[in-house]
Length: 415
Image (tube, rainbow, N blue to C red; front, side, top):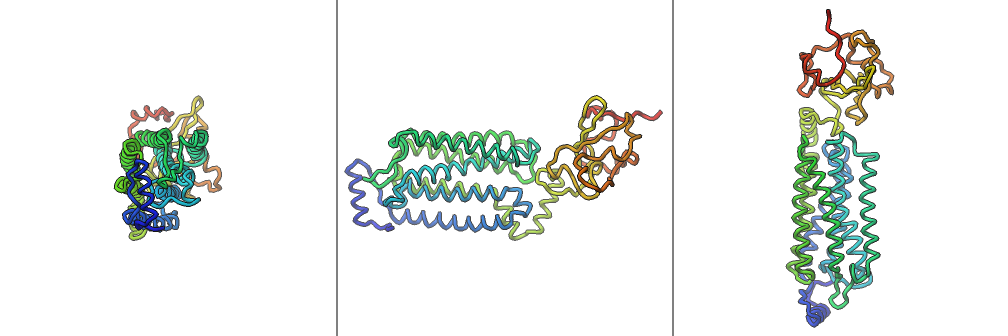
């Protein structure tokens, strides 16, 4: 493929001029764009390989490595589709002139839409963890994947039911793929919808207490993408044949992919850099910060503070009630902790009206029934000193009066 002003390219420019289209020839500027972005994606794929190889490193694992790898692959597919739609290469031959393949399937569905929907799913995963206190797996992950798939299927059905002239078609005169105004509206509407959903999720995440600024990362992503979407929408309707203008097609391509790559690296750079350069030191700092902020559950990191709060359920004779207790009360010596494993609340059964007269099995969590070790760190016969073992994250006050707001049965006062 030549990027020189060959006789064949001169003929293409003249034919376009006769048809009333001012066409800038494909030249070295297009080659430079291809070379620069190809180099960027080469580095990106090396980073993805490093990410997947170190996917069990906790700071990287918390970033959803396979999801971020899929986003990068979709960005590259989007880049390949852009090369054809924006005429950075000569759109000739049976393969490259297949506009439905490159523009619809590669650039839109497996490119722009996939990047957008995977980023939204990542936001939804944070929503499940930080606001719903549920792991992003099982029905939550399946529901998100199903909704994304259904939306893509609807888009494909709309694409193939519309007349060919109203979607994407090949224009032999200028050797380019052309997208109709109606189909541009469908595509832009799909992308705007996905990112509005993403923004709504991140709005709900705005007040989460996060050690590593996940909400800030996604806010920056939404702000940058909305700016890019607005720019692309304006270009699509004010300059419908913008690929014929060298300055516009280069600007649009560079902006799209530089912003997309910036967002990916904005999320991943710190963890990947420290994994490569300061692996052990950063991991220790990362875990310490989680312990201070009380976010071990969200990041699935084993606790180092045995008196952090664990929520348990106390079943009275009338109604089950929730109580916040130090973790040491409901944890086996074998280290099993229902909170760090995303399990449901530990269950506690009250056998008598007076908590001080029950046996040691009172505080045994339901999840610990799977374990054979009967030893526990705490029993009602030997309660820990509330002052000595108080924790900054504890929700149980030392005085008796404020405990009434937790609505759980208290032992009667001694005569």
